[in-house]
Length: 345
Ligand SMILES: C[S@@+](CC[C@H](N)C(=O)[O-])C[C@H]1O[C@@H](n2cnc3c(N)ncnc32)[C@H](O)[C@@H]1O
Image: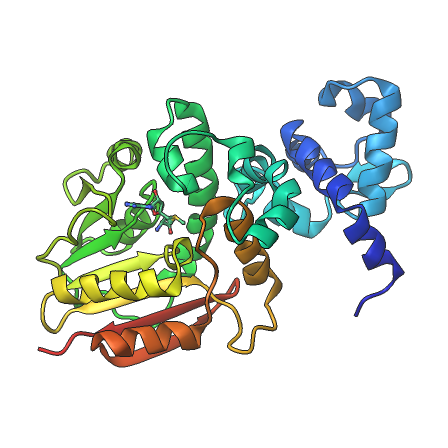
């Protein structure tokens, strides 16, 4: 329910985000996780701040609820321990840093992007050839920025792939999976580890494949996960796969383009093969949820000229229109849906 505090939080949302961002940058949550119940005097030198700014910074964090204060001593609330302490499974700090670098400034062009119906925010953070953030990230010479971008994305995928692996979709029947637009390899590595019989081919832009290949090698999985550098809009979908996994990539394009991609995947998939979709979705009646609806705004203002988050009903209809049969839908945590369908023999 909306109340005065929530209106203040939204009105001052820029301050709330920057407080979290600075706390992550200065490793405040890591410090308090290792050493809870520190006083301001003990904490200030560890943050690398002077007393005056540290006092006001900590007071605002306490007011926001990101830090607890009792008897003059600071500690992390349980949810902060879970999500904002680096190294924890559910850690979202990498995404906070990515939001700061990529989204914060560019969101100031939200009104213009909505009015012009295109992603005018992108130019504020990344110029160059290409209309999508992915095309520009692929072509950028700034490899540090590229790595940060994919690290943030990988952080999100690390949390969601664990849920995927616990689902009732049976992966034991697959032999060779195409990880379509597989990013930095986070999903492929987790899936290959959990299913040692599987071979996986990760397809993405060539420079992203280089990054993924480094991660795959570091995980010791280069013999089972190969990479294939391709532009999905310019080159054919490869054949020879009994399963294709399309995770978090539908939002990059319009529903019409997505339908065309699904059709090309259908045509390339082995007869009897399975196509798997796993991503955030919006409610069928466009009422949220917040995580998916917010991500859609990120796509509209920054990421692509035509992408957005779609509903499960739209995806189901698109799969059926391609000729897929036995479409299964499974509601998943973090506003995700897992959907799979079979190509007839
Ligand atoms: C939102 S990310 C999802 C990555 C991965 N599937 C995951 O779940 O973490 C979309 C991916 O599509 C890739 N991509 C975007 N446009 C592409 C294109 N034209 N050709 C090949 N890959 C593309 C991006 O590089 C990025 O890795």
